[in-house]
Length: 200
Ligand SMILES: Cc1cc2nc3c(=O)[nH]c(=O)nc-3n(C[C@H](O)[C@H](O)[C@H](O)COP(=O)(O)O)c2cc1C
Image 1 (cartoon, rainbow, N blue to C red):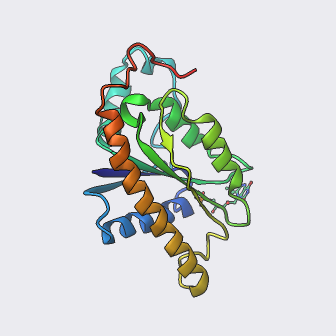
Image 2 (image 1 turned 120 degrees about the vertical axis):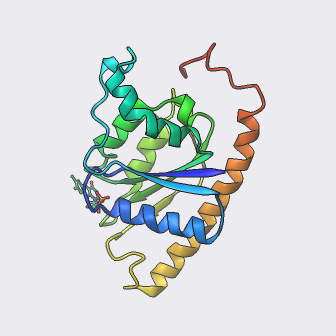
C-alpha cells in the first residue's frame, strides 16, 4: 500500500511542506504504508490547466507522467492545505483540475488544514464541498486542523505537541484502515467511469 502526501502551498519553505514531511516520517516510523511520497506544489511545478491537456499535448504528457504514475500507484492521500484568505491555494485547485479519477478515484484522503493563527476551518469545508465531484477522491470523516502552526511540533510547547502528535497518529491509523477498505471497492468491479465519467 502506498501513500502520497500533497503539500498544497505554492510558497517555498512552506509550513505545509514542513508538516507534510513530519507526517511522512511518522507514517514510516509506524510502518503504516510500504511507500510514502510527498508531492510539493511549492513554486508551481504544475502550470495552470489549459485545454491542450485534453488534446493529449506532448508537453503536458511529459510533465505529468511522473506525477500520474505516483498518484495512480497510491492507495491513500493526505492533502495538506494552508488557509489563504479563507481559501485553499490556487495551486491546489489547479491540482484538482489536472488530476482525475484514474489517479484519485475511490481512494481515501485525510485533509490536514494549517493556519499560522486560529483559522484552518474554511479549507476543510472548501475541499469537502468542491474538490471531489469528478475525481471521486474520498475524504475520510476525520480531519486535522493545525493552528498556530509555526510553533507546533517544534518542541516549543510539549503539551500541545503531545496532543497533536496523538491526534495525528489516530488519523494516520484510520487512514490506513480506510485504504484497505476502499481497495475492496476499487477491486469490486462496481466502479464504472466509462459510463459515468463525471459526477452529478
Ligand atoms: C496569501 C496568504 C493569505 C493568508 N490568509 C490567511 C487566512 O485567511 N487565515 C489564516 O488563518 N491564515 C492566513 N494566512 C496565514 C497562513 O495561515 C500562514 O502563513 C501559513 O503558514 C501558510 O501556510 P504555508 O506556509 O504552507 O503557505 C495567509 C497567508 C498567506 C500567504
